[in-house]
Image: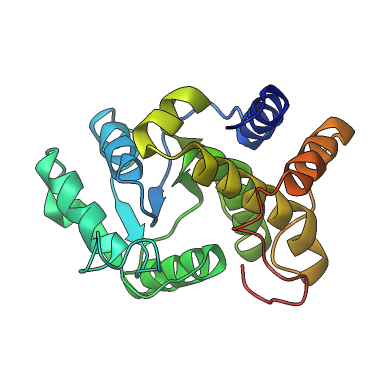
Length: 221
């Protein structure tokens, strides 16, 4: 049973993760691989709205996706986008990245390989990782103007789509920890984090929502 306080704290972290950027036309879209096919759906929607001429889907597999996406996250995203009417020749697939930092670095290398000059990019992630993705991209590829986006939905709707409230809150806590930890390790820029967000994160850790935390000595973005 999840307490009312835990739900309130999770909502605060959810709200904080949203960057509030207004989607606009960009040179390219980069869809960050994960378990969530909604990233591919939202990327396809942006394409059909004329927001970008080219998509990069990036991602290998992880412990949470290897069974559901055996061909790799980026490839499953590509297949989904093609099903939704995106031309295959408008998609590049980066199949090796295993964390957010690699998503950005490997996408940058792929675009350079294809001689694509990107001055701006729509960065499309899961709803609870907009801010983390943005902070990482700004650190690793500062020349690009980043617009962070995700599928517009509420925390309750996202929990319903995943079917596991505790897992979603664990993931929110993990994303928040990285915003606190990774700037010191050089993986992302430092962003202002309000005191009430830090307090909500701390209460959720004490309440045991810790399965997605990393060791402070663990070097991965």
